Length: 480
Image 1 (cartoon, rainbow, N blue to C red):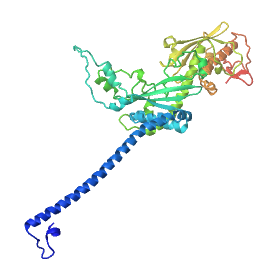
Image 2 (cartoon, rainbow, N blue to C red):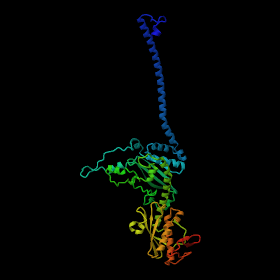
Image 3 (cartoon, helix red, strand yellow):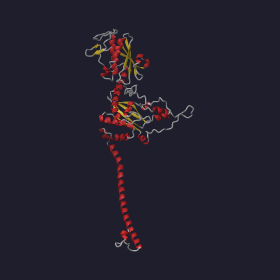
Image 4 (spheres, helix red, strand yellow):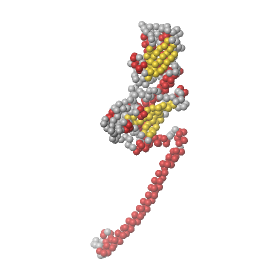
């Protein structure tokens, strides 16, 4: 200030008295403040203009989502016609962000495979999204659990509350609908157990009204077989045991019996379900590549199992009525031996020799075939993996000719692959049809019934084995 306003150009001395200098300084400060005030007013005007513009932009942006939603809603008919389902995809994408990593692996890999292969498989996320958002379902915080001691007067809370805590599920689930042939759809539901960190799977079948299976079954028929549909989908995988080794510790922690299992209402923890989720071993990061390579095998196995189980249900329904379905016909001449009895049995009613070849999981049936007064009793064991694993059949004849009885069993068990090549879904009916045929040969060859079939050579070998192999081209029976 002194340099600009007070000091003169000569000698560098201030001009005027100190009072005059003070007055000039104050006048200068007043001018500076007036200038600053004008700048402040101009800046405040600019700020108010900018604020008004920002408010207008905010209002415009806030009005866009309802308008876009209304626009998408109005295009629903077009989306349905074109098969786009944009609104559904948007909702599913929002829900997918809240899936646990295991279920997200299943969702993303199956969706990607379906879109790439155009297989028609649909994947849907369902459940309580708000609960998944507001609650940390992945936390494993401990909660006190009261356990009734031997001399305690407190009511036990370790049973139901303990089960709820150990078998706690995530609010969201993944549903995979696999289209099979002939209007059959398999709906597989995947659930994630938070504390056990395993994925469970359950299945149900849906059959369209136009499906030919509707005509084969009566109204209200349970399309599920007596054995669970997913058991032994991959050999040896029954879903009975929890794959997480920490489960015994959790059961003990919450006072549950050590042999407690996951409730069947939640599905079963199959090993293939863990692979589909990317779980190679617990405590290790999820393996996305494992999930990716499991998807095609899983979808193929589901399709085959559902159609095979439906055809089995159809065959059992007819066999119990003494009928052989036409789909299970084999190349054979006129057969006079007929099915007389078909009923389900158990291991207690089966002779010891049969029990050595079957397991407790197999379905066992007692069969009686008859021609005139001659009858033959047989036992048929159906494994869970039927028709990949063929039926096992034993014969029980009151005859000393054990060599021919064993040869007949060989035709039904050892050479069953010939029937599989003709189509495996109706393998059971084909086995019964062959049983009737070889029984015809046995009765005619031993003289119990008049011979109406042509044998190329009647007996062969030291056991005098009959010719049980039918040659359709030459219409005769021959030995192997």
